[in-house]
Length: 309
Image (cartoon, rainbow, N blue to C red):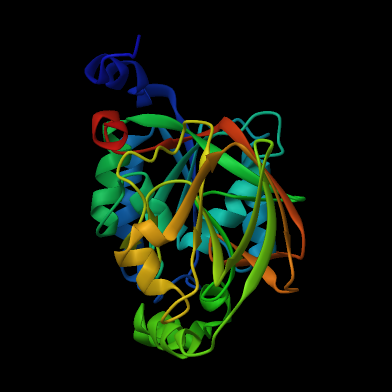
């Protein structure tokens, strides 16, 4: 019997009266506009938590070290301002620790698909409001070889756009920086030959790209079923037929030309030697084994009735 959403919401709501939080932020994320509002962000977080430490990180290594330290430093909540890549590195830092704090995400990047998958949309004020309401949910994480990802793993056409786009161009143009690269890639035919095992079933596929999703948003678009859940122990693998613009039209508009596989364990062998994209970051090359780690981490999110239907 499924829990009543209103009852679940009450059970997941936090008491902030004795909670300690660590807030990590950087000026190197997205379009770099967060620093203009950082004073307001810190002020509102101090009103939410009993104790708050705010730290500006200056490198990816420092971000990872601080996030790991939060798992062993008596911190109840780890709040991060940044883009998808920032959150990706934080998840990779904390998931191997015995105990991880509740995560909070303030979208300050270019696209911020990760936030949308948790109901965190719009500006930083919306994210702060969600944190202040105290609703949380557990979510699944994908393990791919020795790395981890939150919402997307992909290879083939379009998969490298997020990590090859120059940082300065992303700061200046925002999402347009990605779309200009996508146009170029759509005109270069890509063929991926893949042998896939998904929960024991075998598939032999020719496709322009392989796309594995946990949630419903990628590339700034709502592309997965609205019933796709971030905590059901499964992820959805999409394999589209070759076609115009590297199968993109088939995938977006003609779902009958796209094979969808829902599973918790995948083994994938391909004919291409390019890096997998993990949450917009460059990942491992070649053959991969992917396992869904069910409900490993917890995050502040929009009310469960809005997320899980």
